[in-house]
Length: 239
Ligand SMILES: [Fe+2]
Image (cartoon, rainbow, N blue to C red; front, side, top):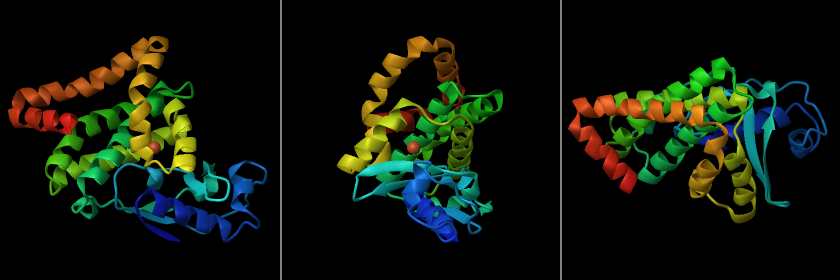
């Protein structure tokens, strides 16, 4: 089963590969009422940078009958291979750069502060934060910047692996009912609640938020060398 596209297309491929082999309603497996036995082999080719689905065992579905939005999390749907080609990103519109790109940061941040984080997942999370902070504004400014896209797509996959190890936290849990009930775009729904989430959460893990800020501050060294990049960042934030 080949999934070519954004998160929804890749997760659909995972779902079809799983449903082709396991009988009954997939929601029984999503809610843990049944356990699968196998799945067709899956190859994923992302054409957006954000979901990280190409690097993990999660597939998120929306049930239009019940408005449930929830992930099937099952090792049977790990892709056998992922083809991550930055050149597939070169025609993305700005909204599909900014939203999924911010979702990379959300995945990395939430997996980093998760109580299930490990030294290995923390390493993945912090590297993803560094890469996305440095490179997302560059591709937002110039969609043809292949070198920056290489780093953004790498960050996306690293963050996808980090949530595979440590999971996400409150914002993703809150966004799922938002998406299921109101059809809100994933990253845009999360962005709407992120500031109060961080204000509420940081006192519980100040050392972790300090490390995140430090990883994002590594862009200051880049700014010192490149004033144009600083201007790019300002425009990205303001947009
Ligand atoms: Fe996400």
